[in-house]
Length: 302
Image (cartoon, rainbow, N blue to C red; front, side, top):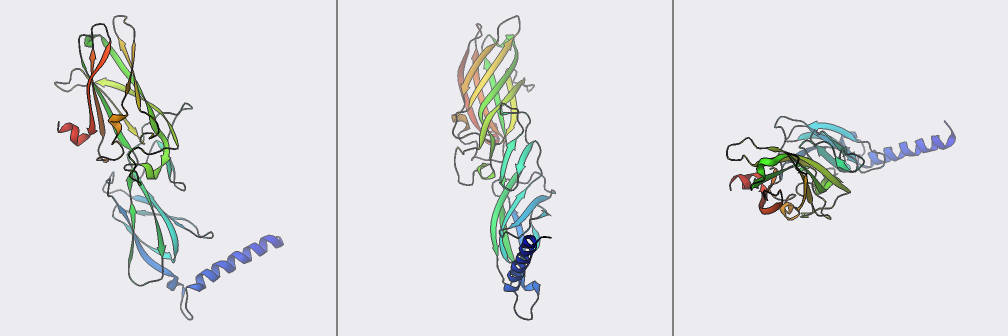
């Protein structure tokens, strides 16, 4: 080991010893520098995906020489012994089909080079907290507020008109969705923003399948799980309807920005619905008749 490295190591060891001894009185031991705390996930705006699941928790000291520790907790909380110091604590449920950056607290979908999402992320929650553990008697609770990170967006098209028998298939592309964003801009955003900002945005495809429910013979529905919308963009739904009998396809663009106004904030543990009623005439021209939108409980109550 060269002289510079030896000096650096000696300095680091001295610094650590000074830190430890600073909270140890004469004749006491290291236990004086420790405190038992309880980290409790708080499911205020969301709920656990599974009542018996483990929650992943990372504890990171806010000092340059500290090392991160990862532990498991049940959905109610976990006790841990920590040195007196400042900490950043993050927690997250198991996830799939997303990229989760634990350090920077960002989430992004898997996508193509065109920023088109190619897989639906699973439902999960994540959150963070900061805490200052100080020498004291008694028990300390650190609340870890969990925020839902994914929400289903269900788009249903109800057709009326003489052109219905000619429908062969319906596909769509929704533009202006979140492709990468911070955890804090989930459901709902920490700062209560109605239309939160994102790091990157793109689009996602929808495939609409006919309903098999009685009384919904002319309904077509598509479902995707989203990280959210891009609050700085409009949300445009581009439909492509193909017909049989050698009729040409019809492309139709619908602005559903207003129908997603509360997508990030209202009843965020439920799927969000946008139901469009379209008239398809015998000439295969399309007109909007009506639309409604809202969380599942509100839609089903109509």
